[in-house]
Length: 327
Image (cartoon, rainbow, N blue to C red; front, side):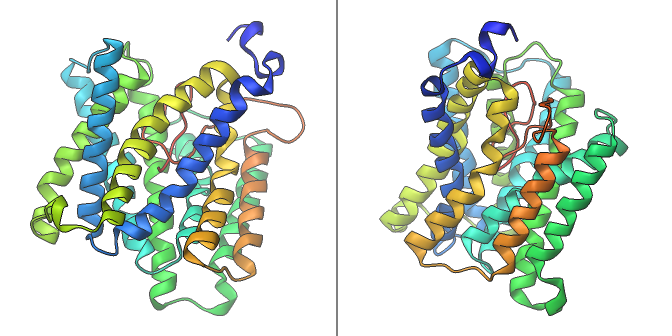
């Protein structure tokens, strides 16, 4: 990145609208999941969503005259990332939201960076553990315990739903450092890799979903709200959002673009409260603030600015190309 492209020298108006739009799209994804699972099995919802997102990115690829990866080795790695970065976490969020509020699912998505870092340090060895990061991790996991409300005891459908959403964040924690280690250095564009990742995930879901949940219903049998939610999740949250995020990284820089992580739960809570009339217990937003504070410390966003691990709800997870999560 050159001095001319650093966030400090870029006018806010050149990247802030896209930044806020991305936070709103990803934050609203949990609302659309909540609506979708009213009529669709979580596996079917994920299948339709991923297939729509893959089709969207293929159209963008064609428009930009880009191409899908051609090396078998890259596709083998995309198979792993497609499972842990798309198919499994998207489905877990669907199962989780059968039991908890959409806004709470959005809060759990924000824990992704806390899981990425220890795996990146201990398993994939793509990051180094420093005192600052250790403090941030400790504070972040304290926030996780507060969100869970462990003093109230464990068990029940609500607690299970929260663990499912935490499991989805854990999947992102595997996919992000894996992709950084095995795919980030390839010659293919982030758009190409993400399109390939979605295609692989769609094939995985096309095989698994009928075996577990039966044949997916035809779209014409679904209500307009559910169809609109699927299209919003796929075309916007999984397709167009990637393009917006790529522009944010190019204009504002990767570090600034990655801070969208902090706004996603805010939009998830606002949308859940305004549209679905959901409510949180006092400890859940308090715990979320502690989690985000821990993430900010671990990423070096408090005090001296340093590059951190980008995370969020998208499809792909190469820190130099886009954030991570839900997505």
